[in-house]
Image 1 (spheres, rainbow, N blue to C red):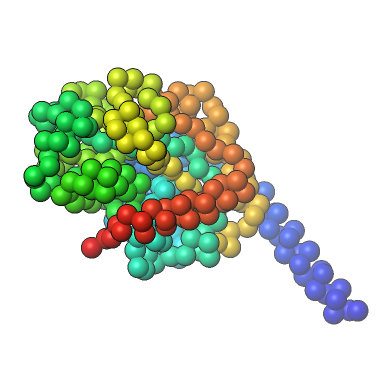
Image 2 (image 1 turned 45 degrees about the horizontal axis):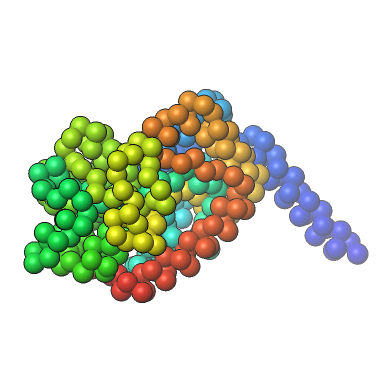
Length: 320
């Protein structure tokens, strides 16, 4: 009887300590480890949300870009960090793709992480250098039939990478290979230089260069046309019905982080993306704000892992 009482008392004490820790958290800066280079959707979301959290918590949110291996370098680093709520991973849907794409990505998404929230999502697009003569995706494909091509990708395992592979190589049957960069920023810079002259990326990275006339979008991967580029057709309108892909940005904490801290961070980020100034900036960059309960995002991540695993297998996409 005494032993049972001690066990109950022990777990009660642990629960009280966890609740107390969540109430006191944060007491020092929080580090957002971004899985890609500056300039892309992950970096944009991390800085927008981080700024709001700094205001909310009175503690600085430090954004650290650690690109490479399609997001795996940052992901593995955060998986090994202390589960105290002070180190979070900000990544994309590559988190769900890489477990199928890489033979050993270095992490187990269910064992090593707690999904916190997906602040936003946006479609991908096929974009070309302004010097490319094709006015439509169909023209580009017809002009490229007998050529050996490469397309710029923000990283192996990102959904823009898979969108490009599936549309240009699998469906259009072009002789084309992905050139992977450490994020959208470097990929856009290469595309503006014409090396290579075509790319597949989420919208926010190349958007300013599209508006400047240096790049041209041939199609977007959304179900309908987007407000910031109303004249650009969807992939379905461009001749690829049923192809609809999105890049979501998600925030994760290491497994073992107290539930109270996970909940507190989820609620704070929900408030951040609901604020009018953040929503205005998100929509200007073609993001659709998401948010919602932590449990819903956790279920969504499981579904995404299964979905992209099928895509990788069926398209026989490999990382060299």
